[in-house]
Image 1 (cartoon, helix red, strand yellow):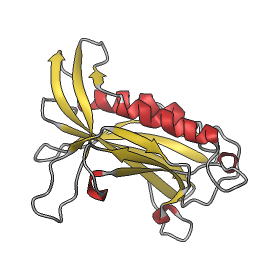
Image 2 (cartoon, one colour):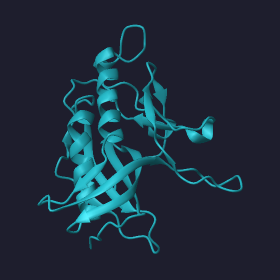
Image 3 (cartoon, one colour):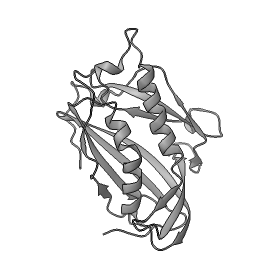
Image 4 (tube, helix red, strand yellow):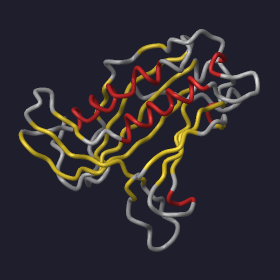
Length: 216
């Protein structure tokens, strides 16, 4: 069952990908600053976020990989609501195979107004194709450009409208902080991003890791 977004909610999008028996997920979070007009639901948020990036992600994945869709959860509610899934844009990538090793990933670094590793975030973009790799072993400029387009689409996603555009929610991308030090910092607004001209690794996606399944 869908629920209406309210001011103060925190919504989290988990975007899923697969290649053979391995799945990958990229997670992004927003804070709802205000709501106006008629009801805007968590399902609306899943649709808007997924539509903003699905084509971009697929453009840097090979036909051997699949974009699966977006799960959206209002993580600030107790008890936590069931995630809403949006899979209309599901489909294979468009680059020619073969792929780079599965643990290879592009890297987007997210910035906040505060210094230190605790106040920075990372997104490991999954399953790049061999054509995304330069002969010197770094991502091609076109791959980096698409990563920038993905980051820009998410960073500048500040309005979520319902299907009829009769209501909207104003949102802001945020970075959550894990517990471990007391007190745990409040979520930090994301202030920008950097596209790294290097490949990163995410070992849990590698061929030697256990099989991972996508929930959508």
